[in-house]
Amino acid sequence: IDDENRVSPTLASSGDISVEWERKVGDGSVTTTVTPNDSIDVEWKDADWTANINMPIDGTEITGANVGIKREVNF
Image (spheres, rainbow, N blue to C red):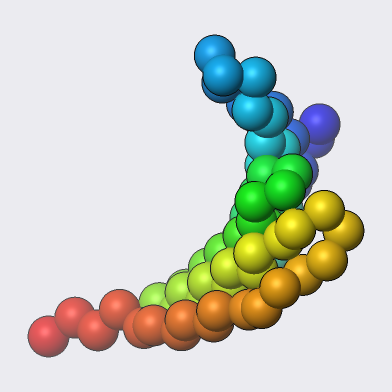
């Protein structure tokens, strides 16, 4: 779309579709992927930190959330 936003649809041979949106934020980015009737996935990268959120969905209902946070450490 522009220098800070990217949208990428995916269509599988089975007919399944997903849409990914990436937004650059400062030195990092936030990427959200929506797969209908499956999940919403969000990945936030900020320098050495990465946060991942996975929310399974069933229709229009979010059925839970899984959150992971990690930091890359170089010695």
